[in-house]
Amino acid sequence: MTTTLRVVLDQLVAPTDPDLAMASRELTCALIAAAPRGCEVAGVVPAAGEDALAEVRALEGLAGVESSPIPRRELSTALSLGLPSGLGGGMLHSPTLFAPLVRHDRVHNHEQTVVTIWDLTPWTHPERVSKASVAWHRAMLKRAEKHADAVVVPLHAMADELAARTKLRGRIRVIAGAAPEGFAEPRDAVGRRRTLGVPEGAVVVDAAGLSAAELGELVAALGREVPDAPVVVLDAPSDAEAVLGSVVFLSALDAADRAAALASASVVLAPRITPTYGWRTLDALVLGIPVLNAASAANRELIGDGGVVVEGGADALATSLAALLAVDADHTRAATLAADRGRGFSWREAGDRVWQLHADL
Image (tube, rainbow, N blue to C red; front, side, top):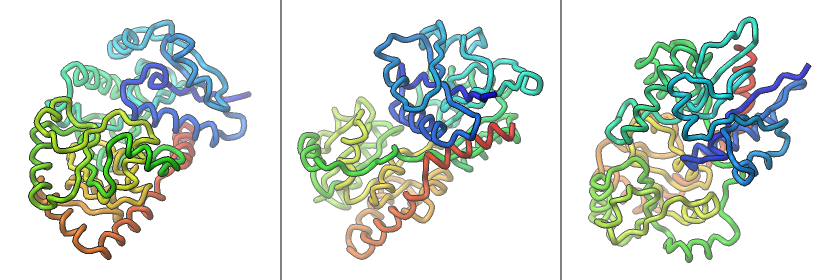
């Protein structure tokens, strides 16, 4: 008898976040590669056209694709209300909170539902997220408290925060994600940087989750401390470019363009302090780029000894950056430590641990 692990792949047919789409794809590939004997992996998706389903069907080794009769937007609402979705049944794993969190029988019918949370911002800093997103995430977490067999988060710091806010208790599991498989500087990186307008040796700022005011404060501090360093900003808030014309803004880059942009950076700054998983920090570590992270429990855990965690705000980050760039030996050592830390993250290990989680359940 074959055991099927059904993985929710809504982010591959109707992506709302490129990092969640990447995590869904990479984890599914890892689950297929790590499947124990007698086990297989199938995809579960919202209703979608053939073009949208192409990426799912392209996953080598996937046993099949099951579709809900409901499109993603309507399905999202149905899930938050606990209405029939066409996704439930069997052993189900979702790389996000997008899952049918309803009553099921784990003991007699061997049904399991496991969901994943990569970002706690909707609960800890709701003012930074749209009201609709906050409402949906809060509704889904309440359903997870009632019906999820386990909730996966990537960091122990996030597990502690989630445990303090919910009744999940022993159902929280920590399984880290990784950079995209094979993430590396592409052969045509110089040409890509030229096209993107990325100067060599730039300071790259991961601006995801920052307000325009916070980003402006940081750019001003960098201008005072390292006035000659070019600045590249990734994923800035939509209203930032109007007030910060002196920097290069990039958003929605694919993996190859992002690797090209990061590979020539002198330093990557991660100023966000909200409890979320630092995907750009992981990218930088894999490429061996020194990283300066703002101080938070999540950032400390993610960076480990592979980078520098800076207490204080924009001025402290800029001062630490200037000190790092001033001594070549320090910069070289930081790059080495970053690369060492980057090797500690693996989607294959994540796949093994997910299979073990479902076996334990």
